[in-house]
Image (cartoon, rainbow, N blue to C red; front, side, top):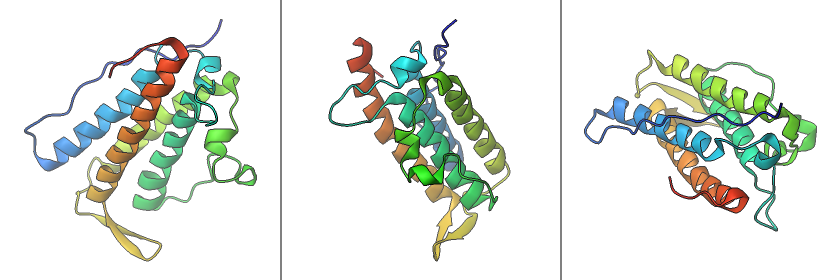
Length: 171
């Protein structure tokens, strides 16, 4: 049986919440929006390059966002020492280029797990908590703003890719 990405229920963020709830709510919304754009597609469809000459794919976006979640929340904010998600010998863009449709379910599960772990890490943290990376001090607030922007940008890409795959449009 061929794996297909599951349907996703999206819950919009509040328009009147406090800062923490709003940032976390909109991050959850955009995380689910990316997964929503993949719902019902097979691994082969997720790996399909649809907008030549770009090699951008939905599977590449899934893998990329799993890496970004891991780097920003687990490695940088929490200071965890973790092995790279993808083979560093394949280059810094291996998340976009080293795709195997047969491993799409694994990549999808990895993104979902990285999101869960990120939420667990920040559950008791303050948006004012900081860490230093490459000589710069960052707040958890900035990480949330960055991640919302990253997901928003890639959700737009995902919408165009999905439309080329099967004609589905809309948020």
